[in-house]
Image 1 (tube, protein in one colour):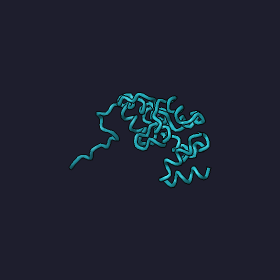
Image 2 (cartoon, helix red, strand yellow):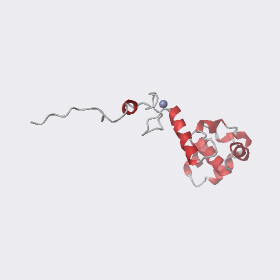
Image 3 (cartoon, rainbow, N blue to C red):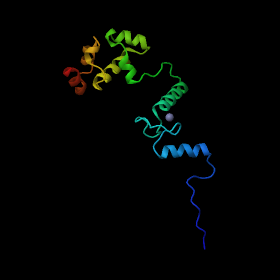
Image 4 (cartoon, helix red, strand yellow):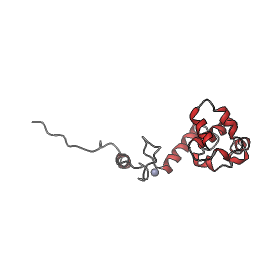
Length: 138
Ligand SMILES: [Zn+2]
């Protein structure tokens, strides 16, 4: 008669730390600190702090020279100065800054009237009807 194999939750080879991290992930928590995961971290289940740290590490590895700006940080910029000043301040191109602003307006984080150049965006994006609607309604 065959002996029934004993069930182990994990193979024995894994370290105690790694088992703990997998368990954290299994219960839907950050594997590093155990806090609630960020909603953007769908697969990794990292919390906001560790997601940011991971992103910074990756950007360093890839060789990105400019720091990451979250949508919240983008909304905090002084948009009343116009696109060119914001682009110079952040070291981005004019096109990137315009894209940020349009996304912020569509996302409702900022009003289209916050930037004096916003009518230029409206004209440039006029193919996209959704953007058009949002900009016109403000
Ligand atoms: Zn964490």
